[in-house]
Amino acid sequence: MIATLYRSYLLEITVFVCGALVMIFEIIGSRIVSPFIGTSTYVWTSLIGIILGALSLGYWLGGRLADRRPDPKVLASVILIAGGLIAFTVLIKDVALSSIASARLGLEIKAVLASILLFGPASICLGIVTPFAVRLKMTSLDRTGSIVGRLYALSTIGSITGTFAAGFFLIPFVGSVRTLYLIAGSLLILALLIAPVTFTTKNIAAGTLLLLGIAASEAGIYLLRQNSDLHDIDTEYSRVQVFNSLDPATGRPIRALATDPYFVQSAAFIDSNELVLGYSRFYHLIRHFRPQFDKTLIIGGAGFSFPKEYLRVYPQARLDVVEIDPQMTRIARDFFGLRDDPRMTIFHEDARMYINRAETGQYDAVLMDAFGSLFSVPHHLTTIEAVRELSRILKDDGVVVFNLGSAITGPSNGFLQAEMRTYMEVFPQVLLFKVRPEYTDDRLQNLVIVASKSAQQMIMTNDDPEIADLLSQQYNGVVALENNILTDDLAPVEYYNSIAQNIYLTSPR
Image (cartoon, rainbow, N blue to C red; front, side, top):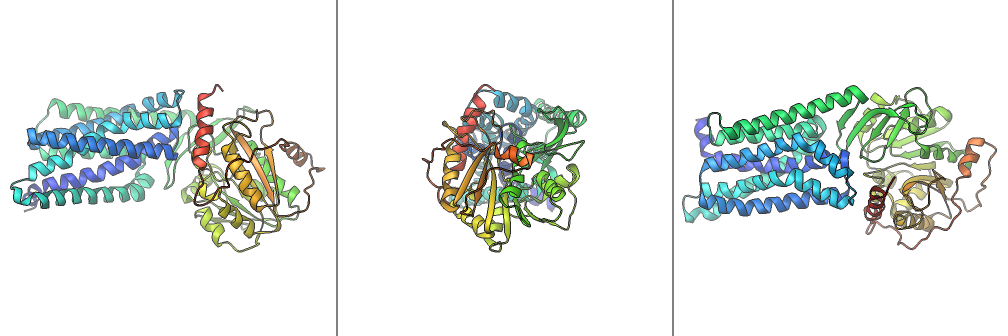
């Protein structure tokens, strides 16, 4: 009975499964490329555009092929080839993406090339499946509409199922690379179910490619784990890599956390509690601009480097940390020595949602350290509406200390222009600091904005040598303010950062 039902609905099962797998393939794609070219809007745009284009080409080819050779064995061969191509993607992905990432091309071109090379060919084959299945299912012109509608509906339902499966289960619990194994293996099995055959050259080649890809990928993971203690972790929000390295400034061993290929988001010395990343030292300016602080909000946890420093240096103060990704907090506990403290409360939610509902006037300071891909601050935390909420939750003389990536002058300074103008619209005093004074003003770099609600002139001297050194790095030049204020309706943050990133990535360093 089951076998009979299976044979009767084999084509329906096929279009459902392939619809699910193509969406899983698309969503997983962003995680595959992220360690090499990031996960910016340009990456997502390229993946979606190229895969949609490939599917459209597949629909057209599928219709023509089905009219010429309406044979289930041909459909099985197409699915087998799709599985083989995904297996080939597993095998070459690291080499191909490394080559693309090292090319002196703009981020947009890199994203398009990666999408075409790794995700285009298999998507074409998957696009062939549904029109081919429609042709095989046709027995009478009287039922054309119902057959086409049913099969395309099943394909779409499969895509919906695959979307939720990828986001809710496969990425956080299976992992991106191993999900590729699953997709390729599922396609190979499906092809054999459609046209059961003994060993053929195509079957052996596809299976061998998958086994080679798995072996190469797992060997690479093992070697990286052995050599640098690399842990490659898929969370609900990003692909995180934790590894051991050496601090370029001191040569001392550190443990680092990265969510993109060019910048480390968090780091800690293995042999001490000192701060590694220079920008985090500037958060200590709160004790200069708001000396009697009691309660602080930190937006962005990552490895929790400064939250740990805050609790150690300021034993009487309290701290709230908003970190959107619960698994990032678990990573901080497992790899960066984060411990529970009664003075620290961690909120796992979107920072904008948190500040929108937070109590008015409850914080002495807000420390902004939230980043997305490639030095880009999530746009909804940069707008004038968000800045007004930050001002609202601060006490009357409260301050914001905001770490951002931008240049000060030149074509890479668009984000700084817009953000400075946005903060100056809300706060009476806004200062700018260079984390690396030796960097030229036109270079993409860490900058720190300090914004105060107090209208009283801020004093720029301090007897504390550490604070005096930080104050000496104030930027006293003129910052152009030609770009518009950022709003919830229009905040082209990634556009500004893409210009800066492309200049950074294509310039000698």
